[in-house]
Image 1 (cartoon, rainbow over the protein chains, first blue to last red):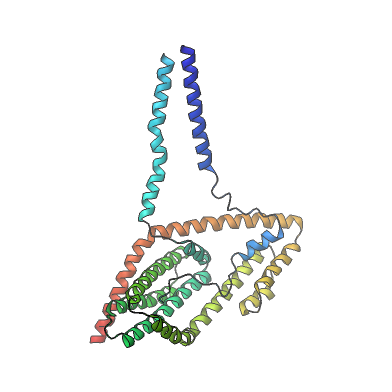
Image 2 (image 1 turned 120 degrees about the horizontal axis):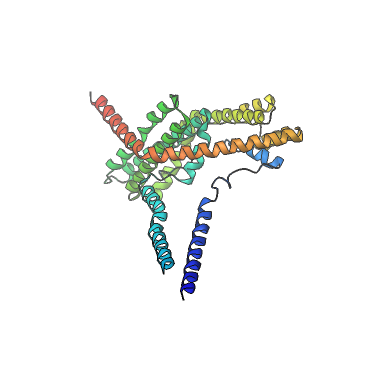
Length: 66
Length: 281
């Protein structure tokens, strides 16, 4: 009986720690990872270089009075 | 039995700890509710404000948009007063006056030597205040405007926009060109090369976006595999720096915007009061 109870408790604890492990992993996903450019092709290089260049027609978005 | 007790204690600790694990998120949500709303458009627009030219472009564009709205607003009031003699335009005029009073503040900011984060933060605050005044004006005047009035206003503002904003449009165009030329030069520097010809063409506005892209591609293709690897790493580094800088800007805006909007409102009211005082003297 004692061994059974201990086994059940241990399994419960394992399940809880596994659950926490998963949450932690999700929270720790590197937020910058998706933003970091994986520079590997000329297209990506040129895209990166042109990111700061803005079109002359580029404008800010604002409310219109009418 | 002892083991069950220990396991029970551990479980209780876990259960007690659970709310604390999520408490941080809850607090952040509360803080967010009190923060000034920064739209995705704002976040996108402040990206180029890291450089003095970029900041100048956005502040000039803000000046242009506000000027445009003030001119249009004046037409709205003129048409309402002409076509609806019983209309009360007092409140709408006040909103328009406050909107107009933002212009000297922005012009002053344009002449100041302020850091990128401060410029971005002020840009978002002025824009938020201008948007709020425009919405109030619209709500106030909407009740009087019928389709004929709207048509009359649209006809009147067509020519008005072109004439009044010509100089400002030209200034924005030139600042964008200078900004682009500077950024292109920087990109070539990262690639360990230079292309003064294309940089000058960008400055003069004689080049298309495709031609700029092609020039970067050409510069990249002219490099050795080792250089390409080095440039790839440098660009990665620059991108990471940009991400950090952007996050810092947004954070600064979040912390300062609310207070700044209050200051702007006080400045605008003082300015209006001074103008009125000056007019009565």
